[in-house]
Length: 263
Length: 134
Ligand code: SF4
Ligand code: SF4
Image (cartoon, rainbow over all chains, first blue to last red):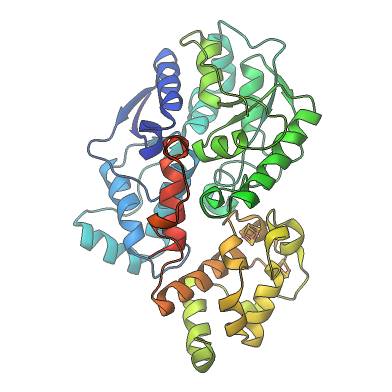
């Protein structure tokens, strides 16, 4: 299985362990992730106004660079931006013409845009993944935290049921963990408000972590570096927050799980 | 009040650029009921739409709400009228940033210690400058 891979800025810096563990796991599973050459930041947020063309340039350049091959990201935000930028190119011929003319690329929206979790579910299959697990996470009580960007808007992301997703729980089960279900798993963590409105971000993140604790979770998993940052930066008792890829690599026996700072 | 004289032009632009017509909203307030950051807002999300309907643009310009909205898309996912309020919030933010020709965030505003800056994901900085500055 061969894919083009877009890391994004944070996976090369603050979230290096997400990339390291995902790449180790992918290679153990026979999933080849070939990094795009000379990629640049996706812009982190999808432009929500149709006259914002400049902010589409970077994701469209990335999509075009994949040359129609399936394009995989690990970060929920990168995936969100790339997937929705592709939708714009498919849906809006006028924008497509302006953006591709400016970039001098030929791109009409071809190629699958995937989050790595989708590769595991749809291309590899959780059943096959389960067969590869050498170090099952037996007895570990883990809660999945989805946040916003993988799920919404569901029409464009087509990732999972936006109100009742199961992909991360299915992953956890295939790794042998005990799934803890929590009330706030699809609620926003506060996102970039941690830069401008820290108290607001802390309050939303606390609700999520405290509800997971009350439900009996020993740890949370996420697919987004900013979610993880927010969930770790709360007041009161914290929970360890892992990238899904860290537990995946651990269960496959390909990397030692790094200790995650508490609180 | 930067919008009031050009209300119709503003609303036409907003509709065109966001693909959303505020007049489609019937004020059920489901958006506000599910918004995760509503406690920090001075106008509730459904009130933002009401203000757009009524042309109270000066009030919207002064409101904290568009800057508290985290673009989580929960309101858009649940609206029975299929309105994407997250897009309308972006339209209001952009109008304020563009018409005022001023940014809401500059690197000098960041009150972060070098240690915090080391930990803060690059993604958070890129996102916030995209949302609060042009
Ligand atoms: S949920 Fe939709 S229809 Fe109801 S108040 Fe909000 S925007 Fe209006
Ligand atoms: S997109 Fe904004 S207004 Fe809508 S629910 Fe999320 S934070 Fe609230």
